[in-house]
Amino acid sequence: MTDAIQSQIKETVDTNDVVLFMKGTKHFPQCGFSSKVASVLSYLSVEFQDVNILESEEMRQGIKDFTNWPTTPQLYVKGEFVGGCDIVTEMTLSGELDTLLKEKGVTFDQEAANKVREANS
View 1 (cartoon, one colour):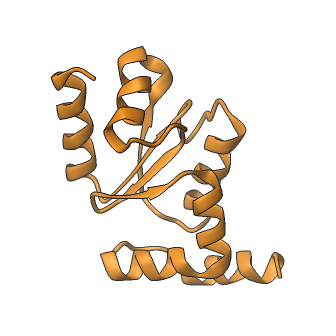
View 2: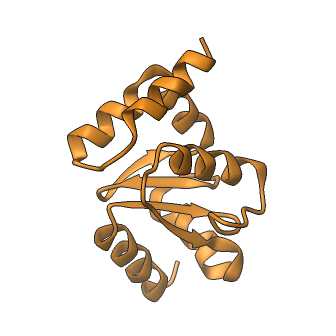
């Protein structure tokens, strides 16, 4: 990974409360896993920065090297790597995502989070 890409990723993660490195954008996801995570965040009214890794091969590989995590999407909350689609889904259903967002001071819609768990119980 080039120093420039590593610096760009670090700056993006450090300067945004919630960042989703994904294929496509939050308004036009280009893979099902990216779409699912973006939809969860949007449904919970979490404001997040999206980074389209398809725009640059350096970014596409760089984010995987940055976290030593082989897949995307990748979610970061207040500089902390949370995980990909399966982890975010599990955390949403268990309430762990609520806890993390609260601990990190990230605003979200608690009622919407409760509805997701209710609908999936």
